[in-house]
Amino acid sequence: MNELTDKFEKRGLTIIGVTDESTQKIKSFIAEKGIKYVIAIKGAGEYKTDGVPHGWLVGPNGSIVWEGHPAELKDDLIEENLKGVSLTPVFSLPKDLRSAQKDLNAGNLASGLEALESHLKKPKSPETEAAAKETIEKVKAFGQEKLQRAEDLAKERHYGDAAGILRSLEKSFKGHEYGAKAKETLEEWKKDKAIKLELDGASTLEKADALVQAKQYRQAVGLLAQLTKGKKYDGTKVREVAEKKLAAVQRKL
Image (cartoon, rainbow, N blue to C red; front, top):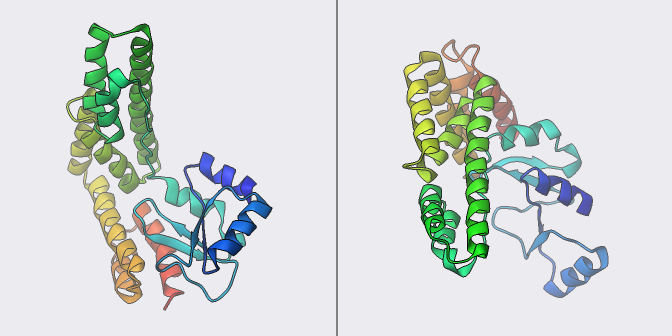
């Protein structure tokens, strides 16, 4: 299981175990097995099952996108739900750069960059100068990587996931060229009828996911049916995704 944990973490996933057993018993189990992942003791909200082992795959928006026997969780399902994941790096900087650190770790990347670049005009020490330069490179690399990721997703017609990344960049890099680029791309997409259809469908998918999270399965089926029936979404990627989700939700009824 620890090998699986390492594999998942490299792909942006985190494993959390859930149990209703006592703290003392679980501590002994963790020590004996050398478990590295977090375990929620005495259950965790709706993560309950009548049998074990049982697993849940939770999407980046907090919704449960799959549940069942862990052995049945396929790589393609994981990949499908990783497309829109965009993890912002966490920074630990010297004391004189704490203001920049605060902005960066709060997701205000443009403000953090501005503070770092300002510091470089008159660095307090060789240490802070080196840290500022290194961090600037990392932040810019992150922004460039996410712009490229959105572009790659768009080529695969996953416009909903791509738009999610761009909206995040527009907000975190507001006032910076990366934020401007993200905003410009989104505005261009909204002018394209085919892309706008994909984006509208992706919004409906998000609402359906929220209904599934609330266990309102019949309402979710109704929304997904809007994407899978009729001709409006024929040939779209969002219809393809909706058909898979619909089949999964119908099994819950």
